[in-house]
Image 1 (tube, protein in one colour):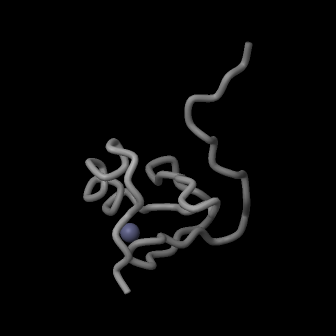
Image 2 (image 1 turned 180 degrees about the horizontal axis):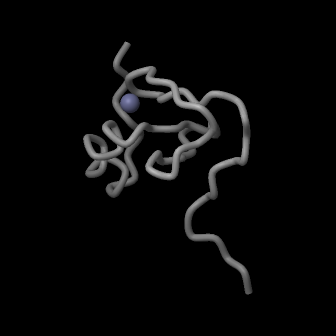
Length: 66
Ligand SMILES: [Zn+2]
């Protein structure tokens, strides 16, 4: 059995953009979070991960900032 609890971030050389604040980073930093919201893969930077921790843990979609 090799069941993944969390989706592993893609290995990519492309920049990763934070879905919340728009911050970018090269590749996918280990401190960032990858979530699936509405079938779309979204990344959150470490700052937004902490800010959204309660939202993520309650399995609610992140509140749009736009
Ligand atoms: Zn962010």
